[in-house]
Length: 305
Image (tube, one colour):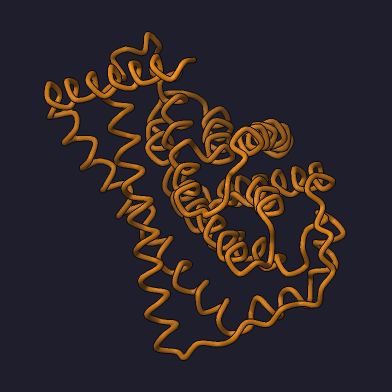
């Protein structure tokens, strides 16, 4: 595609978008309000505590101790830098896109290089456990056990992927575990709150943008409700899950589709992660890895549900 043609296509797209926004102002308003409701009632309560807690864990030697305890195991399994072991553990508990923040901090501190960062990014897109257990399991499926099964299947799928790609971007760094300098409690609290709300606003903004674009262009899609819901779930995960949950389909199919959406994370979450990174992300590699995780996850779910 030539530079001029690309500019023409971009111009036509934004011209069309301006027309759709003006002509469909009610859809835009509805999209913004519904996105905000989903964020504040379903995501924000589970994200903020982990965002703030993670800063304290990093500051008060948790990461150093984790690296000391499990770096040998994780280095053996995934062939990663021993100083990045804490990223996997924190990502398990805080959920996406926190992994991008942890990885970027490690990259800025020169603990890992860009290749190692891309490898870690590929298999640490873990969901927030509170979101899966409470929102997906208890609220959507009225079952704590289903939430646990979905969560464990996603964890296992990502770990299997990490093992599959272990020989890609192998870390040759065998230096001793690095101990970071501590900040005072007040400084840590201030930093954690600022970072937590900054990250949250990026997430909210991305949800609003992607949901609005989807709703504006929805009339163009010549598909049924199921297909449209799947498309939305792979564009904006949270809104897509909300739509999939309301469909008149079997619970097993809902579980598989919702879990697949979470495994892929959605273009919205990928853009959130990309906005937090200061190194070049290998987009094709990341998307290919997310597709592999979906396949693995579908196989696991079919065995346990």
